[in-house]
Length: 201
Image (cartoon, rainbow, N blue to C red; front, side, top):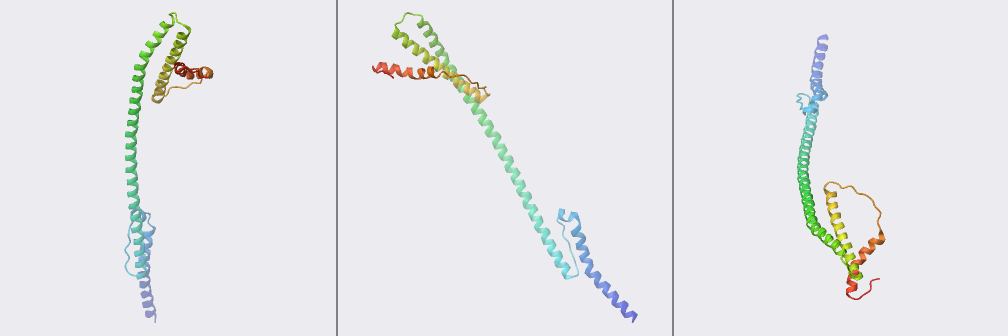
């Protein structure tokens, strides 16, 4: 009798070991921190249920590995596109700076070419003001002087704006004589009105 009991116990222990050994192996692999990091697979022999569990686990590891590979490719592509965009931005910035410099240089050259004869004109007007003139001639001379002064101011403003774009010219507030400004705007039209014998009001 005891022999039968011992034999039955030995058979049960062997069957139990065959059942628990693959499950323990699977549990060790799943609990290992390196498993997910390295996407390790597990091989289980013996109990069919444990094999199915291992197959499911291996399929999960395969999906995780594929997802990680896709993510790595996306990150690599995003980094590559970012580097390309940064390189294009650097080129565009250099081109914009070169264009701005060329524009500023052009404006400076044009302003110089215009202001030089304009200063000569203002000098001639100063000499003409010292000669005897009629009241009408003197009024014409005053308008020419004011127009020449206004043109010089406009050229200086254009040059200042160019410098403001290039280097940052400081702006300053100052009072504006509105009445004189309106008179300067109207006076050029008075000459045309007088030429047509019209009165500008």
